[in-house]
Amino acid sequence: QQQVKQSPQSLIVQKGGISIINCAYENTAFDYFPWYQQFPGKGPALLIAIRPDVSEKKEGRFTISFNKSAKQFSLHIMDSQPGDSATYFCAASKDSGGSNYKLTFGKGTLLTVNP
Amino acid sequence: DTGVSQDPRHKITKRGQNVTFRCDPISEHNRLYWYRQTLGQGPEFLTYFQNEAQLEKSRLLSDRFSAERPKGSFSTLEIQRTEQGDSAMYLCASSLGGGLQFFGPGTRLTVL
Image (cartoon, rainbow over all chains, first blue to last red; front, side):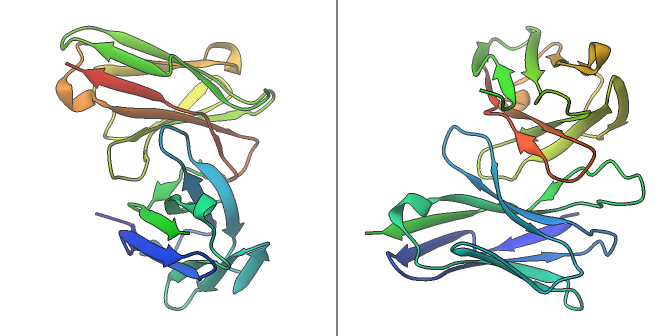
């Protein structure tokens, strides 16, 4: 049972364009939604995270949009750069009530930004 | 470097051998997680420690796998009688009481 579904599997964007990656979750107990960036041979690095009490969070060129009723959230990368080329993972966890906060990840999106 | 460290970074072993990986979390982080990542997939949760107590194990963690976190500091993950299906990246993450988890660089295991 895949609790977090991520799309697209791969994405090619021109430099300066907008990259959009979408995720949907099933477990309504999830209340913490981070996005991680991973380069080949490296561990995932936290990019930005959101909680369901807000609909949008922006940090620099990265924005998360969150739709609680649809159980969907997305990552927007503005002014995409070749250095953004990496695999992006959405994740979700239950971050309250004494839970263990384990992360459930999507399958990842390989982003390629062409110069 | 004050981030999460893992050792070794790469391990090649023959089927049937035992292997042990080490993770050093960020200092004072009380929570430590092990995940496994196979090619083209997202990390999957294996097990979780709060201080020295192992509080949850995934069904992915067969009897051949064991993890410890003595004294609530570093952690080890041991795989006995390795199988080719164990080939993966083993990731360690730590956090201080919340969902914000910091990952190490991982240990890439190849079982021949």
